[in-house]
Image (cartoon, rainbow, N blue to C red; front, side, top):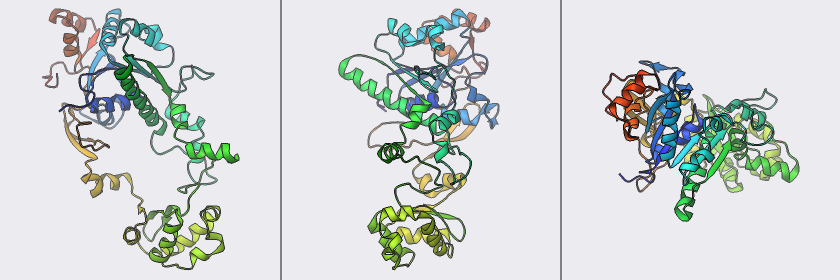
Length: 407
């Protein structure tokens, strides 16, 4: 299988979520990803519960298609190995606090001296410059400081975090787009480059509607529950046994929704519902009116009616229901894989379907240091040198006694 990034080597110095998500997708696209971990406990997310046979299931979902080398970077010999890996890498990823990689000699300028074509991507809480450049940051900090928490949740409620680590994933996706752009640039112009993003900026970049409204009219976005700020009806409505989402924002869909779905043909002529803007302005009354009808029948009934009329809508699932939904299963978003320690397990499937080979799930996440020996061998270390490095604690393999079939 000729995947688009086959033959490219990624040195992954990242930890937890934003960086590892980015490197996982690079691995899905065919790159050889070498995840460099601390020889003590490895990636912080290896400690996350639940664990099976001592291995974190969450870590295993996020770190497929990667090799792991575990090094003691406080040992000069371990740092030297990291430098050797960086010298051979096409792409280097890091998400240390700004300044840390420079002290280790693993910053862009140091690596570029021996590897001028390298593409180097840095992720941090707030970026490498600016008043907050040295400030540490996690997803929840960035959600709070980007304004996202104040526009999430129910009106009048406490600030609410998005249910997933949105800014982390946004940062990983943003870095990924920059890396792929840099790769195209290198193909065209022959030069590598440095790029960096942050949890704060990546999250802000996902707020174009709110940004436009603020600078267009001074509107400050506040929490609206499931409502859209520019479209109505466009939210989740209570039914007899749950909730159903309705996206009938255009005038044509609104009329069809009233006449054919909820059997209220007079509503489109009501003065307070005549236009999209009026429906948004009167969203409280609109919600009350729609729910007075929808609460009389089940979610299934309303989804069937919406589908029959071509109005976008669907049930509000719990996560368990979403994962077991026949459509999600048919689209192969739940993928079976065998892990060398966990055993048979589930991992997230590939969200992009393509006519050609674009991505694949080829190998499970590694145990800590699983590929330490094979990576050192690739670097030219002899068997005796490798044994010495293991003996002195420079290199680590958590299960060195096992047959490393993935090497």
